[in-house]
Length: 138
Image 1 (cartoon, rainbow, N blue to C red):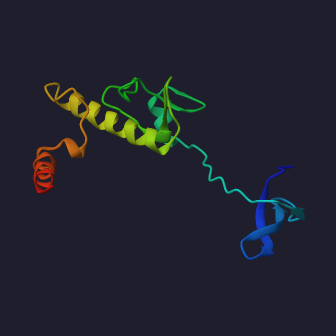
Image 2 (cartoon, rainbow, N blue to C red; image 1 turned 60 degrees about the vertical axis):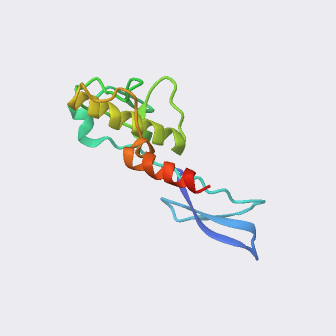
């Protein structure tokens, strides 16, 4: 028997929650608990589907990549919660950094003469000129 429960009802006054109902997923039995606070933690289940059929190296924490977000498959890069590596930071900010590295690594893969320094949109020429314009206005 699976002992999974869903939070099914909140009780309280104003912004203060005092009790919750937990409904057992298999039996439908309801358990009422007195609580001080309710903290919502959004989780997820990984499902790599057919990607594992490609032979991608993975661990319990994701598809394994190197520091440039390169998988062991040529031309396949990953980023965010999808990947893991030794110094992985599991925060949204870390995922943004992963994405910059993955995109720039893909660009180098497609064009080995591309700039090796990872760039972001604010590094683009158009933004440099606009930033100069704003600086002159001060």
